[in-house]
Amino acid sequence: MIDNNFRRVLLRGGKSIYYSWFVIAALGLNISQYALEGGEASMLNQRKWATKGKIQIADHEEHSWARPDGWFNMIKRVIFHRKNQPSARPTKLWILLAVITLFGFFGLPLSGLTMNFGTGYYASKGNPLLVGFTKSNWNSRFKSSVSQRVFFEWNTDATISIPGSGVIYSAPQADRSKLDYLVSLPNTLPDDARVSNLFLTPQADVPINGSSWGLAFGFECSVVNKLSDFTILNHREASTNFSSSMDSQYTVLGGNAIIQVYNQTDSTVRVTFANDIQAVAEIGYDDAGQTQQEVASPPAASECYNPTPLPQDKTMPYPGLDQPQALEFVLWQNLSAHDLYVENPPTVNLTLPDTIPTLHGAYSTSVEDGIGTSTPMAAIGVRCTSVSAVGTADINGRHSTFSNFQRSDDTPSGASGLQCAERLSLGVPHLLFSNALSSSDPTEWLSYFYNSVGKFQQGYSQADYEFTGNQINLVSSYLQATELQRSLTRAYSLYALELVYNNGVGYVDQDGNYVHNSSFTNNNATAYTRNTILLPGIVPPVVVAILLALWALGSLGLSLLYGFRRH
Image (tube, rainbow, N blue to C red):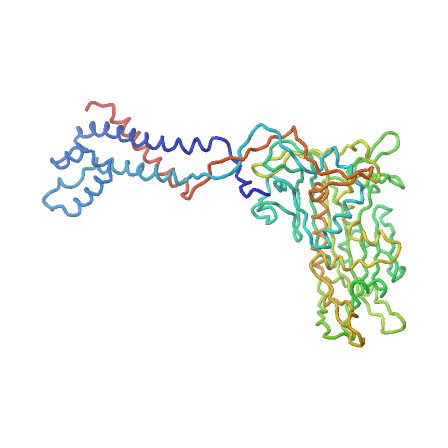
């Protein structure tokens, strides 16, 4: 369970300060009065501060300026005194001493309201116990296992929880108060916002300081309205080359990027989702290894956070934090509004803004059995970029920040082409159509994008059937460009969290054995300890600071100027 007081991270000694303040207050008032009384005796001997009658002399003999009853009596006396009794008024010295005492009289009690007790954390010298993947077991997973888990969570609107304290570390210059997903604990990654310069690392149940190994990353998805805004899909081939029932793949940019085509216009494919919508998707993304080395068939390990082995004992690293990797997505759709012979048919919303005009009609609807006419489909587009790397960073548990990231991507012992964690920039495009990639037959895929943003098909009874139970699935609106953007952003967020935490569960290793999600000790970091700490109170400290400063300076000044003179 996440501790709501996790952000209360302070230095030790707060309780001692809190209690010692009462001692300081009690001694301070007495010392101040003693100092003022010493100065008072000397000042009364000077003509400037002299008294004018017995009443004023009595005021100073009794030191009435130092007590609340003396203040009230003086106020009453001034209000009701006779005009022919000037000695009833206080002396300038009495007023000065009373004002100085008032500063301390109100300042010291109010100072207690600037502090409060609460549950929080303070630094200790113990090493933290962490949960999550680290350098020693990062590549113990099968490559496909990460994508398969994220695919389920992505299209079922599930969430991935961060174990332990649930902190996502940001750069020191980031204003976390303006990032909704970092304000409260546990932190999460957004479905609808750009993220940059973040760090995920194994978690403890308490804040930690020190060096930790993890994933540094960032990503951004934006709606595209022009084909020229793409860098990969603007090299796409004519769509007339592809069958309405088969998917295809080809490379562009000299083999440095891949374009995949997924067609869902055939009725045998789309019927499992919705009969009233046809769709075609084209995605383009930077290929693994090809942009980093001049070889025709790079090893599969180049898809992971490992250096790719090259001839002559050389290696080529994967793209790092300074090399953004692109994922581009165009979705053609056509939603039918004609009579589908169902009872109580849905009201169809044919609104589809943010289309790409130059791609309109690149694909058309499929016509089967000579029924109907082919209709050009409208296209929407989204372009995403991402960066990621693994390594060590210095983390600050008090501020939830990281700094001094040092890439550390040496291949762990035993890693192979199938046994590694696929990089963020490749894992996301691979998970989006993982159901289609795993099947040799045409497979429905559009429903997963609808489901990922909370949109679902609905079953309707067919009116021309004589028996009940025969239904047809329909949707009532297009998948909008902003929804596709949110779907892809969600995929990046979930995949990044899965890479480091695996949703807090174990994994299957290379031998087919289930490995529990065990904890380990980080000897390069120190843990905070949960305890009672001193917190801000209800009174602003600056108000009390002014009162106490005037009280202290007044008492000290009069004591130094007059306290050591002859009385």
